[in-house]
Length: 302
Image 1: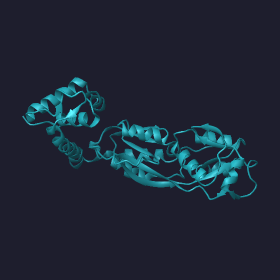
Image 2: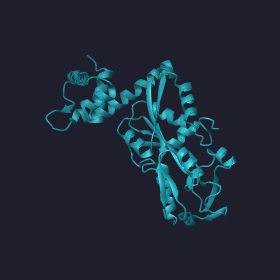
Image 3: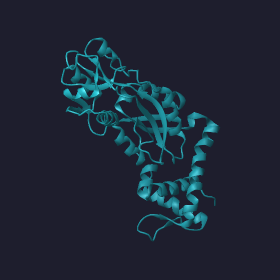
Image 4: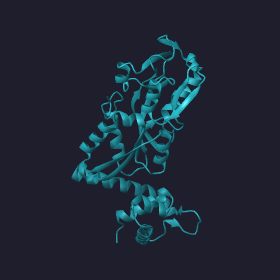
C-alpha cells in the first residue's frame, strides 16, 4: 500500500513542530489521529521514523532522510491543485499580523486584493506590536507578518515594502517657535510615545538617542490616534506619519516640528517562514508589496 499525503503531512508537522500534540493542534486533528497516521506510514516504509525510546522526540536516520522529501511532496500538492484548478483551490483561514500604522492605512486595500486573487481564502488579521507578531510567526501561530525590524534569522523570508516617513508633531501653541531645531533641543519637551514592544517606537527612539537626544517620556500608550490627541491637547510632542494626519495638520490641530537631523524613513517588511509547504504566504507577501500605501486612510475622519 502506498504512503498517503495525509500520513506524510502528519509525519512532517510532528517533526517540524517537535511533538504529536503540536502537530495535532496545527492540523486541527485529534492527537490519536496524528499518531495513527504516522504508525501507518511507518508500516508502509517498514521502519520507525521517530526514536520512541528517547525522552525528547527525535528522528531516526530514516526520519532525517525522509523529512526533506516530505517537505517537497507537501509543497508540490498545493501547486498541483493550483495548476489544475486555479487560485480558487486555496481556501480556509489565512492568519497574518500587522502593526497599527498598517491597520490605519492600507490594510483594507490589502484584504480586498487578497479576496480578489484568492476568493476562497478567509483573511484573519491581528493588529499588535511587531515584536509580538514576529514571536507568533516563529511559533506557527501566524502565516505572515507585516511589520518593522524583523529578526535576522534564516528561518524567515523578508520582502521589503515601502518606507513610512515620520515627523515630530505638537499642538500649534506648544513646543519651539522655530520651524527647524537641532534634534537635541527636543529634550526640552515631554515626548509622547507608544509602549514598549512597538517596532516603530524602538527604531525612532534608538535613532534619536544615538543622535544626541535625551528622552523625557511623559506618556506611553498603544494607540497612534490617542498619541495624536494628546499632542493636540498640548501635553507633549510625538512622532507620527504626517501624511496620515494631514487633515488634522490642515485644520490647525497639529503642526510639524522639523529637526536636524530629521527622522529617517522606516522600512516595513512582509515576513513569512521559509519552510512553509504552502506558497500562499509568499503570494500574499507579494500582494502586500503592491498594496502598501502609508498615505491612505482606512476610514475617513471628521
